[in-house]
Image 1: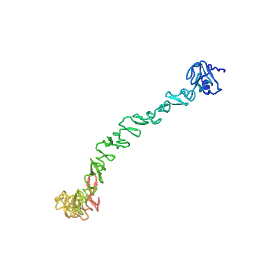
Image 2: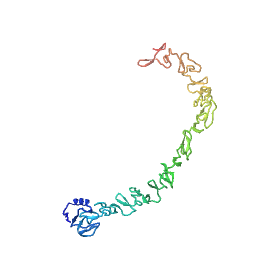
Image 3: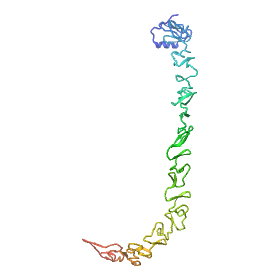
Length: 381
């Protein structure tokens, strides 16, 4: 058989040639006397080395090769088992893998190929149970499942938590404490002063109207919770019959719950009064008679001028200002007919220059100084 010497041939051409070369009868053979060896059942010439026997001169021929001629120089390889040429020439398996049946596979049965690495799915924290399933930094992979590294922790979902202190998983997974609460020894409690755990709520029992002072102690209608005690909003109010009542003015609860005033007697400042005779509440609450006057029929009445004070005089049991009262001008009973009372005297509105036409209308003439004018027929002149 005639030999075809490769000589200084382009390497990429050689790779292409050896890819298509087969060991079928009739395929061309190649020889490179500068080669370093053969492989996988090759009958090499002198200088060959590799998977086959050594010899002088490398030669890959269809008669001697039972696999493929691969590499440069050409060597006969078994692509079903060769790690450097697995399934085809040049397909190299990673160091942790072997070539079986023309495919790269993990060396042991307890390993699985994930991406390009052989891993143990039972213990690998980056591929736990299946490829790509990673465990958290505080977890490890045991028997194909992520478990907590700290034996005191419990797996809740994908998180390792301490059920004794975790507010989101207190005592058991997914049992969360309220915003103001904390988890102590696996039970929710309240950390803020004045708060108590009422059901699932951390309540401020100092102001909570539904839990005032203690859990489930609800305040009544209109009440507020102050310092843990239910109170009405006003000091004048009392909690009567389920609601806050102003006992300072309520005739049905005057001064206290269920204290009822007699008909016609209002409740004035928490006391039932008779406004027909009460000098401090004469006619209505808060209307007080002055100067020792008495209350008669709901009206303040006097018995002497001394009870009236100032320019007021007691006329028909009433204190009147006699300086301006036209029915009692100057003294009781002195009536000014069609006149006004000015300074305790009846004034003629037709002629009085100080009360011309009406009380207090003073007639004046402006010259260098102001002098009293005259009044004629009710008109200043």
